[in-house]
Image (cartoon, rainbow, N blue to C red; front, side):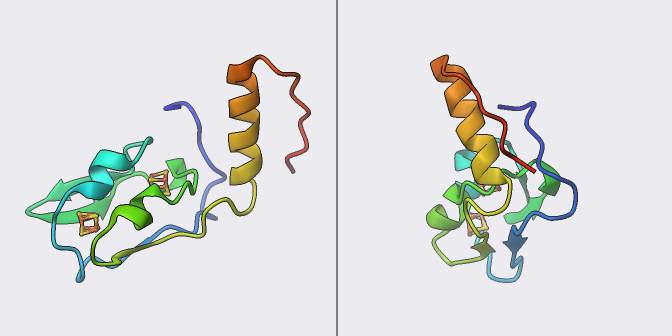
Length: 95
Ligand code: SF4
Ligand code: SF4
């Protein structure tokens, strides 16, 4: 999944650094390694690689992360990826 990239500058991912308590959950759960942790504060290191799966926001204990999961092209890209892995015929309906 590391080779997937979203369309530049349209990802809905937001991080409230002031609320972050440095638990590291977002670093652990993100399949694209979007987050880094520096001095017990999360930071977004590669926003445009986010696929808006929502795992980080669901696992943040203080609600410091917001993202609209499965919006825009992300849902289509994910569906294509799953179909490709399953060997199904891919119908490219994205954009
Ligand atoms: S929404 Fe998914 S891909 Fe994007 S930063 Fe969160 S866990 Fe990573
Ligand atoms: S999951 Fe939330 S509190 Fe934990 S490091 Fe990430 S942003 Fe900070």
